Length: 572
Image 1 (cartoon, rainbow, N blue to C red):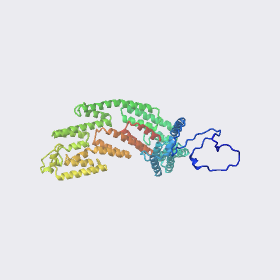
Image 2 (cartoon, rainbow, N blue to C red; image 1 turned 180 degrees about the vertical axis):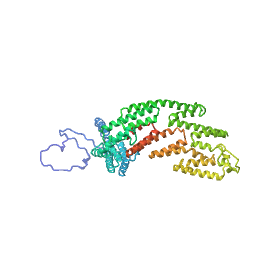
Image 3 (cartoon, helix red, strand yellow; image 1 turned 90 degrees about the horizontal axis):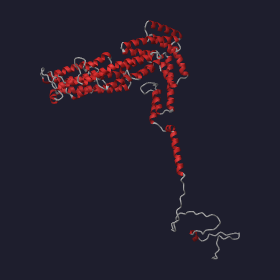
Image 4 (spheres, rainbow, N blue to C red; image 1 turned 90 degrees about the vertical axis):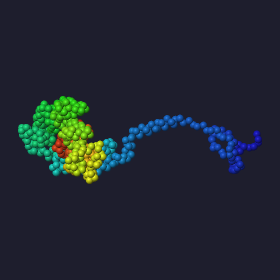
Protein backbone atom coordinates (compact mmCIF):
# COMPACT_ATOMS: atom_id res chain seq x y z
CA UNK A 1 0.00 0.00 0.00
CA UNK A 2 1.20 3.48 -0.71
CA UNK A 3 0.24 4.82 2.57
CA UNK A 4 -2.02 7.47 1.01
CA UNK A 5 -5.33 7.70 2.59
CA UNK A 6 -8.12 7.51 0.06
CA UNK A 7 -10.65 10.24 0.39
CA UNK A 8 -13.41 7.67 0.13
CA UNK A 9 -12.15 5.68 3.04
CA UNK A 10 -14.62 5.63 5.83
CA UNK A 11 -13.81 7.75 8.81
CA UNK A 12 -15.50 8.13 12.05
CA UNK A 13 -18.63 10.18 11.85
CA UNK A 14 -18.04 13.77 12.56
CA UNK A 15 -18.07 17.19 11.02
CA UNK A 16 -16.28 17.41 7.69
CA UNK A 17 -15.29 20.72 6.29
CA UNK A 18 -16.03 21.24 2.61
CA UNK A 19 -13.04 21.77 0.32
CA UNK A 20 -12.82 22.67 -3.39
CA UNK A 21 -9.94 20.37 -4.14
CA UNK A 22 -7.47 20.94 -6.91
CA UNK A 23 -8.84 22.63 -10.00
CA UNK A 24 -6.39 20.75 -12.19
CA UNK A 25 -8.08 17.49 -11.25
CA UNK A 26 -11.48 18.52 -12.62
CA UNK A 27 -10.71 17.17 -16.11
CA UNK A 28 -9.37 13.88 -14.78
CA UNK A 29 -11.78 10.96 -14.47
CA UNK A 30 -12.46 9.91 -10.97
CA UNK A 31 -11.19 6.49 -10.01
CA UNK A 32 -13.80 3.84 -9.68
CA UNK A 33 -15.30 3.41 -6.29
CA UNK A 34 -16.34 0.09 -5.05
CA UNK A 35 -19.53 1.00 -3.27
CA UNK A 36 -21.15 -2.40 -3.59
CA UNK A 37 -23.73 -1.22 -6.17
CA UNK A 38 -24.00 -2.31 -9.83
CA UNK A 39 -21.98 -0.20 -12.19
CA UNK A 40 -23.44 1.57 -15.29
CA UNK A 41 -21.41 2.84 -18.20
CA UNK A 42 -22.62 6.09 -19.81
CA UNK A 43 -21.21 7.07 -23.19
CA UNK A 44 -19.91 10.57 -23.29
CA UNK A 45 -19.40 12.68 -26.38
CA UNK A 46 -15.99 12.63 -27.83
CA UNK A 47 -13.82 15.32 -26.32
CA UNK A 48 -12.08 17.84 -28.49
CA UNK A 49 -8.81 17.28 -26.65
CA UNK A 50 -8.44 13.84 -28.21
CA UNK A 51 -7.96 10.62 -26.39
CA UNK A 52 -9.22 7.20 -27.12
CA UNK A 53 -12.51 6.94 -29.12
CA UNK A 54 -15.19 5.28 -27.06
CA UNK A 55 -16.60 2.09 -28.43
CA UNK A 56 -19.81 2.56 -30.57
CA UNK A 57 -23.07 2.14 -28.80
CA UNK A 58 -24.96 -0.97 -29.85
CA UNK A 59 -28.47 -0.03 -31.21
CA UNK A 60 -31.43 -1.46 -29.49
CA UNK A 61 -33.62 -3.80 -31.51
CA UNK A 62 -37.05 -2.29 -32.31
CA UNK A 63 -38.47 -4.80 -34.84
CA UNK A 64 -41.95 -4.47 -33.31
CA UNK A 65 -42.29 -0.92 -34.72
CA UNK A 66 -42.74 -1.96 -38.39
CA UNK A 67 -45.79 -4.23 -37.85
CA UNK A 68 -47.36 -1.58 -35.65
CA UNK A 69 -46.88 1.12 -38.30
CA UNK A 70 -48.35 -1.17 -40.99
CA UNK A 71 -51.40 -1.84 -38.83
CA UNK A 72 -51.83 1.87 -38.17
CA UNK A 73 -51.64 2.70 -41.87
CA UNK A 74 -54.13 -0.05 -42.77
CA UNK A 75 -56.52 1.18 -40.10
CA UNK A 76 -56.23 4.79 -41.26
CA UNK A 77 -56.80 3.82 -44.92
CA UNK A 78 -59.84 1.73 -44.01
CA UNK A 79 -61.30 4.57 -41.98
CA UNK A 80 -60.80 7.05 -44.81
CA UNK A 81 -62.43 4.68 -47.28
CA UNK A 82 -65.44 4.09 -45.04
CA UNK A 83 -65.86 7.81 -44.42
CA UNK A 84 -65.15 8.97 -47.99
CA UNK A 85 -68.66 10.34 -48.53
CA UNK A 86 -68.52 12.34 -45.33
CA UNK A 87 -65.05 13.63 -46.13
CA UNK A 88 -66.14 14.52 -49.66
CA UNK A 89 -68.80 16.75 -48.19
CA UNK A 90 -66.08 18.70 -46.40
CA UNK A 91 -64.44 19.60 -49.72
CA UNK A 92 -66.18 22.50 -51.47
CA UNK A 93 -67.54 21.67 -54.95
CA UNK A 94 -67.65 24.67 -57.23
CA UNK A 95 -69.83 22.94 -59.81
CA UNK A 96 -72.31 21.73 -57.19
CA UNK A 97 -72.50 25.17 -55.61
CA UNK A 98 -73.13 26.75 -59.02
CA UNK A 99 -75.98 24.34 -59.73
CA UNK A 100 -77.52 24.97 -56.31
CA UNK A 101 -77.25 28.72 -56.83
CA UNK A 102 -78.97 28.46 -60.21
CA UNK A 103 -81.68 26.27 -58.68
CA UNK A 104 -82.37 28.77 -55.92
CA UNK A 105 -82.54 31.59 -58.46
CA UNK A 106 -85.03 29.63 -60.56
CA UNK A 107 -87.11 28.91 -57.47
CA UNK A 108 -87.11 32.58 -56.49
CA UNK A 109 -88.15 33.50 -60.03
CA UNK A 110 -91.07 31.06 -59.90
CA UNK A 111 -89.67 28.75 -62.59
CA UNK A 112 -90.52 25.57 -60.75
CA UNK A 113 -90.69 22.78 -63.35
CA UNK A 114 -89.91 22.22 -67.01
CA UNK A 115 -88.03 20.13 -69.56
CA UNK A 116 -85.30 22.53 -70.69
CA UNK A 117 -82.91 21.90 -67.82
CA UNK A 118 -83.21 25.38 -66.27
CA UNK A 119 -86.14 24.92 -63.86
CA UNK A 120 -85.69 24.72 -60.10
CA UNK A 121 -86.78 21.10 -59.96
CA UNK A 122 -84.41 19.98 -62.73
CA UNK A 123 -81.47 21.87 -61.23
CA UNK A 124 -82.03 20.55 -57.70
CA UNK A 125 -82.34 17.03 -59.16
CA UNK A 126 -79.08 17.60 -61.04
CA UNK A 127 -77.41 18.64 -57.80
CA UNK A 128 -78.81 15.56 -56.09
CA UNK A 129 -77.43 13.36 -58.86
CA UNK A 130 -73.99 14.95 -58.40
CA UNK A 131 -74.12 14.41 -54.63
CA UNK A 132 -76.89 12.00 -53.63
CA UNK A 133 -76.69 12.81 -49.90
CA UNK A 134 -76.77 16.59 -50.36
CA UNK A 135 -79.09 18.08 -47.76
CA UNK A 136 -79.33 21.29 -49.76
CA UNK A 137 -80.58 19.44 -52.84
CA UNK A 138 -83.17 17.48 -50.85
CA UNK A 139 -84.35 20.60 -49.06
CA UNK A 140 -84.52 22.43 -52.39
CA UNK A 141 -86.78 19.76 -53.90
CA UNK A 142 -88.99 19.94 -50.82
CA UNK A 143 -89.30 23.71 -51.23
CA UNK A 144 -90.17 23.25 -54.91
CA UNK A 145 -92.93 20.84 -53.88
CA UNK A 146 -94.30 23.35 -51.39
CA UNK A 147 -94.19 26.07 -54.04
CA UNK A 148 -96.14 23.78 -56.38
CA UNK A 149 -98.78 23.33 -53.67
CA UNK A 150 -99.08 27.10 -53.37
CA UNK A 151 -99.37 27.39 -57.16
CA UNK A 152 -102.03 24.68 -57.27
CA UNK A 153 -103.98 26.43 -54.52
CA UNK A 154 -103.88 29.76 -56.37
CA UNK A 155 -104.88 28.15 -59.68
CA UNK A 156 -107.73 26.27 -58.03
CA UNK A 157 -109.01 29.43 -56.37
CA UNK A 158 -108.90 31.20 -59.73
CA UNK A 159 -110.77 28.35 -61.43
CA UNK A 160 -107.80 27.20 -63.56
CA UNK A 161 -108.39 23.52 -62.88
CA UNK A 162 -105.96 22.01 -65.41
CA UNK A 163 -103.12 24.17 -64.13
CA UNK A 164 -104.01 23.27 -60.55
CA UNK A 165 -103.99 19.55 -61.42
CA UNK A 166 -100.60 19.79 -63.14
CA UNK A 167 -99.04 21.61 -60.17
CA UNK A 168 -100.63 19.13 -57.76
CA UNK A 169 -99.17 16.18 -59.66
CA UNK A 170 -95.67 17.65 -59.44
CA UNK A 171 -96.12 18.35 -55.71
CA UNK A 172 -97.23 14.76 -55.17
CA UNK A 173 -94.13 13.46 -56.97
CA UNK A 174 -91.76 15.65 -54.95
CA UNK A 175 -93.39 15.38 -51.52
CA UNK A 176 -94.74 11.86 -51.78
CA UNK A 177 -98.21 12.93 -50.67
CA UNK A 178 -99.14 14.56 -47.40
CA UNK A 179 -102.19 16.25 -45.91
CA UNK A 180 -101.82 19.39 -48.04
CA UNK A 181 -101.72 17.34 -51.23
CA UNK A 182 -104.74 15.26 -50.26
CA UNK A 183 -106.79 18.28 -49.24
CA UNK A 184 -106.07 20.02 -52.51
CA UNK A 185 -106.83 16.85 -54.43
CA UNK A 186 -110.23 16.61 -52.75
CA UNK A 187 -110.98 20.26 -53.49
CA UNK A 188 -109.97 19.80 -57.11
CA UNK A 189 -112.24 16.78 -57.53
CA UNK A 190 -115.12 18.68 -55.97
CA UNK A 191 -114.47 21.64 -58.26
CA UNK A 192 -114.36 19.48 -61.35
CA UNK A 193 -117.41 17.43 -60.62
CA UNK A 194 -119.88 18.52 -57.99
CA UNK A 195 -122.56 15.92 -57.35
CA UNK A 196 -125.16 17.45 -59.64
CA UNK A 197 -122.58 18.03 -62.34
CA UNK A 198 -121.47 14.39 -62.18
CA UNK A 199 -124.94 13.14 -62.96
CA UNK A 200 -125.18 15.60 -65.83
CA UNK A 201 -121.84 14.39 -67.28
CA UNK A 202 -122.96 10.77 -67.14
CA UNK A 203 -126.19 11.62 -68.95
CA UNK A 204 -124.21 13.47 -71.64
CA UNK A 205 -121.79 10.56 -71.98
CA UNK A 206 -124.59 8.03 -72.43
CA UNK A 207 -126.23 10.19 -75.08
CA UNK A 208 -122.93 10.63 -76.91
CA UNK A 209 -122.32 6.87 -76.84
CA UNK A 210 -125.79 6.18 -78.21
CA UNK A 211 -125.06 8.63 -81.04
CA UNK A 212 -121.79 6.84 -81.83
CA UNK A 213 -119.69 9.80 -80.71
CA UNK A 214 -116.90 8.08 -78.84
CA UNK A 215 -113.95 10.44 -79.14
CA UNK A 216 -113.36 14.17 -78.84
CA UNK A 217 -113.79 16.59 -75.96
CA UNK A 218 -117.56 16.09 -75.93
CA UNK A 219 -117.41 12.39 -76.81
CA UNK A 220 -118.53 9.60 -74.50
CA UNK A 221 -114.97 8.59 -73.65
CA UNK A 222 -113.84 12.06 -72.53
CA UNK A 223 -117.02 12.62 -70.50
CA UNK A 224 -116.79 9.31 -68.68
CA UNK A 225 -113.10 9.98 -68.11
CA UNK A 226 -113.86 13.31 -66.42
CA UNK A 227 -116.23 11.60 -64.02
CA UNK A 228 -113.71 8.89 -63.13
CA UNK A 229 -110.88 11.37 -62.67
CA UNK A 230 -112.96 13.05 -59.97
CA UNK A 231 -114.52 9.91 -58.48
CA UNK A 232 -112.58 6.71 -59.08
CA UNK A 233 -115.30 4.65 -57.40
CA UNK A 234 -118.04 5.66 -59.84
CA UNK A 235 -119.07 2.30 -61.30
CA UNK A 236 -121.40 3.79 -63.90
CA UNK A 237 -118.56 5.77 -65.48
CA UNK A 238 -116.21 2.77 -65.25
CA UNK A 239 -118.66 0.50 -67.12
CA UNK A 240 -119.30 3.25 -69.65
CA UNK A 241 -115.57 3.60 -70.35
CA UNK A 242 -115.28 -0.15 -70.89
CA UNK A 243 -118.02 0.07 -73.53
CA UNK A 244 -116.18 2.95 -75.19
CA UNK A 245 -113.02 0.83 -75.18
CA UNK A 246 -114.87 -2.08 -76.83
CA UNK A 247 -116.24 0.16 -79.57
CA UNK A 248 -112.88 1.78 -80.29
CA UNK A 249 -111.15 -1.61 -80.26
CA UNK A 250 -113.60 -2.89 -82.89
CA UNK A 251 -112.76 0.10 -85.08
CA UNK A 252 -109.02 -0.49 -84.57
CA UNK A 253 -109.29 -4.13 -85.62
CA UNK A 254 -111.17 -3.14 -88.73
CA UNK A 255 -108.46 -0.58 -89.56
CA UNK A 256 -105.82 -3.30 -89.12
CA UNK A 257 -107.77 -5.55 -91.48
CA UNK A 258 -107.98 -2.71 -93.99
CA UNK A 259 -104.22 -2.20 -93.64
CA UNK A 260 -104.82 1.38 -92.51
CA UNK A 261 -101.92 1.55 -90.11
CA UNK A 262 -102.23 5.26 -89.37
CA UNK A 263 -105.87 4.98 -88.29
CA UNK A 264 -105.23 1.82 -86.29
CA UNK A 265 -102.37 3.43 -84.39
CA UNK A 266 -104.46 6.48 -83.60
CA UNK A 267 -107.37 4.39 -82.28
CA UNK A 268 -105.13 2.24 -80.08
CA UNK A 269 -103.50 5.37 -78.67
CA UNK A 270 -106.93 6.82 -77.83
CA UNK A 271 -107.88 3.61 -76.02
CA UNK A 272 -104.67 3.83 -73.98
CA UNK A 273 -105.53 7.43 -73.08
CA UNK A 274 -109.19 6.97 -72.22
CA UNK A 275 -109.09 3.43 -70.76
CA UNK A 276 -105.48 2.81 -69.64
CA UNK A 277 -106.40 -0.53 -68.06
CA UNK A 278 -108.39 -1.85 -70.99
CA UNK A 279 -108.02 -5.64 -71.07
CA UNK A 280 -107.62 -6.09 -74.83
CA UNK A 281 -105.04 -3.34 -75.19
CA UNK A 282 -102.04 -5.73 -75.18
CA UNK A 283 -103.59 -7.94 -77.88
CA UNK A 284 -104.37 -4.89 -80.01
CA UNK A 285 -100.77 -3.75 -79.76
CA UNK A 286 -99.60 -7.24 -80.66
CA UNK A 287 -101.84 -7.24 -83.74
CA UNK A 288 -100.47 -3.84 -84.73
CA UNK A 289 -96.91 -5.06 -84.28
CA UNK A 290 -97.58 -8.15 -86.41
CA UNK A 291 -99.25 -6.07 -89.10
CA UNK A 292 -96.38 -3.60 -89.05
CA UNK A 293 -93.90 -6.47 -89.27
CA UNK A 294 -95.58 -7.85 -92.39
CA UNK A 295 -95.78 -4.42 -94.00
CA UNK A 296 -92.20 -3.69 -93.05
CA UNK A 297 -91.02 -6.83 -94.82
CA UNK A 298 -92.69 -5.71 -98.04
CA UNK A 299 -91.50 -2.12 -97.68
CA UNK A 300 -87.98 -3.22 -96.80
CA UNK A 301 -87.85 -5.39 -99.90
CA UNK A 302 -88.96 -2.50 -102.12
CA UNK A 303 -86.48 -0.10 -100.52
CA UNK A 304 -83.70 -2.64 -100.99
CA UNK A 305 -84.65 -3.12 -104.63
CA UNK A 306 -84.64 0.65 -105.12
CA UNK A 307 -81.19 0.97 -103.57
CA UNK A 308 -79.90 -1.90 -105.71
CA UNK A 309 -81.22 -0.14 -108.80
CA UNK A 310 -79.47 3.06 -107.71
CA UNK A 311 -76.15 1.26 -107.40
CA UNK A 312 -76.69 -0.32 -110.82
CA UNK A 313 -77.35 3.10 -112.37
CA UNK A 314 -81.01 2.39 -113.14
CA UNK A 315 -82.37 5.65 -111.75
CA UNK A 316 -85.40 6.10 -114.01
CA UNK A 317 -86.91 4.44 -117.05
CA UNK A 318 -89.87 2.49 -118.33
CA UNK A 319 -91.31 -0.32 -116.27
CA UNK A 320 -90.75 -0.95 -112.57
CA UNK A 321 -87.17 -2.22 -112.62
CA UNK A 322 -85.66 1.11 -111.62
CA UNK A 323 -85.12 3.09 -108.43
CA UNK A 324 -87.80 5.68 -109.12
CA UNK A 325 -90.50 3.05 -109.63
CA UNK A 326 -89.53 1.12 -106.47
CA UNK A 327 -89.52 4.17 -104.22
CA UNK A 328 -92.84 5.37 -105.64
CA UNK A 329 -94.32 1.93 -104.93
CA UNK A 330 -93.39 2.33 -101.27
CA UNK A 331 -94.97 5.76 -101.06
CA UNK A 332 -98.17 4.42 -102.59
CA UNK A 333 -98.71 2.23 -99.51
CA UNK A 334 -96.90 4.37 -96.93
CA UNK A 335 -97.05 8.04 -97.99
CA UNK A 336 -94.88 9.19 -95.12
CA UNK A 337 -92.09 6.65 -95.47
CA UNK A 338 -88.87 8.55 -94.78
CA UNK A 339 -86.63 6.01 -96.54
CA UNK A 340 -88.65 6.21 -99.76
CA UNK A 341 -88.62 10.01 -99.68
CA UNK A 342 -84.87 9.95 -99.17
CA UNK A 343 -84.61 7.53 -102.11
CA UNK A 344 -86.44 9.96 -104.39
CA UNK A 345 -84.02 12.65 -103.29
CA UNK A 346 -81.11 10.39 -104.21
CA UNK A 347 -82.65 9.82 -107.64
CA UNK A 348 -82.93 13.57 -108.12
CA UNK A 349 -79.30 14.02 -107.04
CA UNK A 350 -78.18 11.34 -109.51
CA UNK A 351 -80.03 13.11 -112.32
CA UNK A 352 -78.33 16.40 -111.39
CA UNK A 353 -74.93 14.70 -111.52
CA UNK A 354 -75.74 13.36 -114.98
CA UNK A 355 -76.90 16.83 -116.04
CA UNK A 356 -73.60 18.36 -114.93
CA UNK A 357 -71.75 15.71 -116.91
CA UNK A 358 -73.83 16.60 -119.97
CA UNK A 359 -72.99 20.27 -119.48
CA UNK A 360 -69.30 19.39 -119.31
CA UNK A 361 -69.79 17.66 -122.67
CA UNK A 362 -71.59 20.76 -123.99
CA UNK A 363 -74.83 18.80 -124.41
CA UNK A 364 -77.20 21.45 -123.09
CA UNK A 365 -80.31 19.74 -124.44
CA UNK A 366 -79.63 16.52 -122.54
CA UNK A 367 -78.73 18.49 -119.41
CA UNK A 368 -82.01 20.37 -119.57
CA UNK A 369 -84.01 17.14 -119.90
CA UNK A 370 -82.26 15.61 -116.90
CA UNK A 371 -82.69 18.72 -114.78
CA UNK A 372 -86.39 18.83 -115.65
CA UNK A 373 -86.77 15.28 -114.35
CA UNK A 374 -84.87 16.19 -111.18
CA UNK A 375 -87.03 19.25 -110.68
CA UNK A 376 -90.17 17.09 -110.55
CA UNK A 377 -88.64 15.18 -107.62
CA UNK A 378 -86.74 17.96 -105.81
CA UNK A 379 -87.80 21.36 -107.13
CA UNK A 380 -85.97 23.37 -104.44
CA UNK A 381 -82.72 21.44 -104.38
CA UNK A 382 -79.69 23.70 -103.95
CA UNK A 383 -77.67 21.49 -106.30
CA UNK A 384 -80.44 21.75 -108.91
CA UNK A 385 -80.39 25.54 -108.75
CA UNK A 386 -76.59 25.58 -109.06
CA UNK A 387 -76.74 23.28 -112.09
CA UNK A 388 -79.44 25.34 -113.81
CA UNK A 389 -77.23 28.41 -113.41
CA UNK A 390 -74.73 26.79 -115.75
CA UNK A 391 -77.22 26.72 -118.61
CA UNK A 392 -77.75 29.83 -120.74
CA UNK A 393 -80.33 32.33 -119.59
CA UNK A 394 -78.53 34.63 -117.17
CA UNK A 395 -77.31 38.12 -117.98
CA UNK A 396 -73.75 36.88 -118.36
CA UNK A 397 -74.70 33.82 -120.34
CA UNK A 398 -76.91 35.28 -122.99
CA UNK A 399 -79.09 38.25 -123.84
CA UNK A 400 -78.06 41.77 -124.62
CA UNK A 401 -76.45 42.45 -121.24
CA UNK A 402 -73.10 40.91 -122.06
CA UNK A 403 -71.84 42.10 -125.43
CA UNK A 404 -74.67 44.06 -126.95
CA UNK A 405 -75.94 41.17 -129.09
CA UNK A 406 -79.38 40.05 -128.03
CA UNK A 407 -79.10 36.94 -130.22
CA UNK A 408 -75.87 35.68 -128.72
CA UNK A 409 -76.15 32.80 -126.28
CA UNK A 410 -73.12 31.63 -124.38
CA UNK A 411 -72.81 29.04 -121.65
CA UNK A 412 -70.22 29.53 -118.93
CA UNK A 413 -68.74 26.25 -117.75
CA UNK A 414 -66.61 25.43 -114.72
CA UNK A 415 -63.49 24.98 -116.85
CA UNK A 416 -63.92 28.23 -118.72
CA UNK A 417 -62.99 30.63 -115.95
CA UNK A 418 -61.12 32.99 -118.24
CA UNK A 419 -64.04 33.18 -120.65
CA UNK A 420 -66.43 33.77 -117.76
CA UNK A 421 -64.25 36.57 -116.45
CA UNK A 422 -64.36 38.28 -119.83
CA UNK A 423 -68.10 37.66 -120.20
CA UNK A 424 -69.11 39.42 -116.96
CA UNK A 425 -68.77 43.19 -116.90
CA UNK A 426 -67.38 45.01 -113.85
CA UNK A 427 -70.86 46.36 -113.11
CA UNK A 428 -72.27 42.86 -113.16
CA UNK A 429 -69.49 41.58 -110.93
CA UNK A 430 -70.29 44.34 -108.44
CA UNK A 431 -73.96 43.39 -108.53
CA UNK A 432 -73.13 39.73 -107.97
CA UNK A 433 -70.90 40.64 -105.01
CA UNK A 434 -73.69 42.75 -103.50
CA UNK A 435 -76.19 39.91 -103.88
CA UNK A 436 -73.79 37.45 -102.26
CA UNK A 437 -73.26 39.84 -99.33
CA UNK A 438 -77.02 40.17 -98.87
CA UNK A 439 -77.43 36.39 -99.07
CA UNK A 440 -74.79 35.87 -96.38
CA UNK A 441 -76.59 38.37 -94.16
CA UNK A 442 -79.86 36.51 -94.76
CA UNK A 443 -78.20 33.26 -93.63
CA UNK A 444 -77.08 34.98 -90.44
CA UNK A 445 -80.67 36.12 -89.80
CA UNK A 446 -81.97 32.62 -90.51
CA UNK A 447 -83.88 33.74 -93.62
CA UNK A 448 -83.05 30.71 -95.73
CA UNK A 449 -86.13 30.29 -97.98
CA UNK A 450 -88.30 33.20 -96.81
CA UNK A 451 -89.15 35.96 -97.39
CA UNK A 452 -89.35 35.50 -101.17
CA UNK A 453 -86.82 37.64 -102.99
CA UNK A 454 -84.85 38.48 -99.86
CA UNK A 455 -84.08 34.93 -98.72
CA UNK A 456 -80.57 33.52 -98.99
CA UNK A 457 -81.82 30.93 -101.49
CA UNK A 458 -83.30 33.53 -103.84
CA UNK A 459 -80.38 35.94 -103.50
CA UNK A 460 -77.80 33.28 -104.36
CA UNK A 461 -79.89 32.15 -107.33
CA UNK A 462 -80.16 35.74 -108.55
CA UNK A 463 -76.39 36.10 -108.31
CA UNK A 464 -75.90 32.91 -110.32
CA UNK A 465 -78.40 34.10 -112.89
CA UNK A 466 -75.96 36.93 -113.61
CA UNK A 467 -72.77 34.88 -113.34
CA UNK A 468 -73.32 31.15 -113.23
CA UNK A 469 -69.64 30.59 -112.51
CA UNK A 470 -69.29 32.90 -109.50
CA UNK A 471 -67.55 30.74 -106.89
CA UNK A 472 -68.92 32.62 -103.85
CA UNK A 473 -72.52 32.39 -105.02
CA UNK A 474 -72.18 28.74 -106.02
CA UNK A 475 -70.50 27.78 -102.73
CA UNK A 476 -73.05 29.75 -100.72
CA UNK A 477 -76.00 28.08 -102.41
CA UNK A 478 -74.54 24.59 -102.07
CA UNK A 479 -73.65 25.29 -98.43
CA UNK A 480 -77.21 26.24 -97.42
CA UNK A 481 -78.16 22.71 -96.25
CA UNK A 482 -75.30 22.73 -93.74
CA UNK A 483 -76.37 26.16 -92.46
CA UNK A 484 -79.95 24.96 -92.08
CA UNK A 485 -78.81 21.92 -90.11
CA UNK A 486 -76.94 24.15 -87.65
CA UNK A 487 -79.97 26.42 -87.23
CA UNK A 488 -82.17 23.39 -86.63
CA UNK A 489 -79.86 22.03 -83.95
CA UNK A 490 -79.95 25.42 -82.20
CA UNK A 491 -83.75 25.53 -82.39
CA UNK A 492 -84.03 22.06 -80.84
CA UNK A 493 -81.59 22.99 -78.08
CA UNK A 494 -83.60 26.15 -77.32
CA UNK A 495 -86.89 24.25 -77.19
CA UNK A 496 -88.28 26.08 -80.24
CA UNK A 497 -89.75 22.93 -81.78
CA UNK A 498 -92.00 24.66 -84.33
CA UNK A 499 -89.00 26.54 -85.69
CA UNK A 500 -87.02 23.29 -85.81
CA UNK A 501 -89.86 21.64 -87.74
CA UNK A 502 -89.91 24.44 -90.31
CA UNK A 503 -86.15 24.18 -90.71
CA UNK A 504 -86.38 20.42 -91.18
CA UNK A 505 -88.83 20.96 -94.03
CA UNK A 506 -86.39 23.46 -95.55
CA UNK A 507 -83.54 20.98 -95.20
CA UNK A 508 -85.60 18.30 -96.91
CA UNK A 509 -86.25 20.70 -99.80
CA UNK A 510 -82.64 21.84 -100.16
CA UNK A 511 -80.92 18.49 -99.81
CA UNK A 512 -83.36 15.66 -100.51
CA UNK A 513 -81.87 12.26 -99.89
CA UNK A 514 -79.14 13.47 -97.55
CA UNK A 515 -78.26 10.58 -95.23
CA UNK A 516 -77.95 12.83 -92.16
CA UNK A 517 -81.63 13.73 -92.29
CA UNK A 518 -82.67 10.45 -90.66
CA UNK A 519 -80.94 11.45 -87.44
CA UNK A 520 -82.32 14.99 -87.64
CA UNK A 521 -85.82 13.61 -88.14
CA UNK A 522 -85.54 11.46 -85.02
CA UNK A 523 -84.21 14.39 -83.00
CA UNK A 524 -87.19 16.45 -84.09
CA UNK A 525 -89.58 13.71 -82.98
CA UNK A 526 -87.85 13.49 -79.61
CA UNK A 527 -88.10 17.27 -79.24
CA UNK A 528 -91.86 17.07 -79.83
CA UNK A 529 -92.11 14.49 -77.04
CA UNK A 530 -90.29 16.90 -74.71
CA UNK A 531 -92.68 19.65 -75.76
CA UNK A 532 -95.67 17.41 -75.05
CA UNK A 533 -94.46 16.65 -71.53
CA UNK A 534 -93.82 20.33 -70.87
CA UNK A 535 -97.30 21.29 -72.06
CA UNK A 536 -98.80 18.59 -69.88
CA UNK A 537 -96.93 19.91 -66.83
CA UNK A 538 -98.45 23.32 -67.56
CA UNK A 539 -101.97 21.87 -67.64
CA UNK A 540 -102.35 21.94 -71.45
CA UNK A 541 -103.39 18.33 -72.08
CA UNK A 542 -104.89 19.00 -75.48
CA UNK A 543 -101.73 20.73 -76.65
CA UNK A 544 -99.71 17.87 -75.18
CA UNK A 545 -101.57 15.27 -77.23
CA UNK A 546 -101.21 17.38 -80.36
CA UNK A 547 -97.46 17.53 -79.76
CA UNK A 548 -97.37 13.73 -79.39
CA UNK A 549 -99.13 13.38 -82.73
CA UNK A 550 -96.33 15.45 -84.29
CA UNK A 551 -93.76 13.28 -82.52
CA UNK A 552 -95.33 10.12 -83.95
CA UNK A 553 -95.13 11.67 -87.43
CA UNK A 554 -91.35 12.09 -87.18
CA UNK A 555 -90.31 9.26 -84.85
CA UNK A 556 -93.00 6.56 -84.74
CA UNK A 557 -90.60 4.04 -83.23
CA UNK A 558 -89.28 6.26 -80.43
CA UNK A 559 -89.41 4.12 -77.25
CA UNK A 560 -90.47 7.14 -75.17
CA UNK A 561 -93.60 7.75 -77.20
CA UNK A 562 -95.99 5.27 -75.58
CA UNK A 563 -94.77 6.13 -72.09
CA UNK A 564 -95.46 9.79 -72.79
CA UNK A 565 -99.00 8.99 -73.96
CA UNK A 566 -99.72 7.05 -70.78
CA UNK A 567 -98.09 9.61 -68.50
CA UNK A 568 -100.13 12.47 -69.95
CA UNK A 569 -103.34 10.44 -70.02
CA UNK A 570 -103.08 9.42 -66.37
CA UNK A 571 -101.72 12.77 -65.17
CA UNK A 572 -98.57 11.28 -63.66
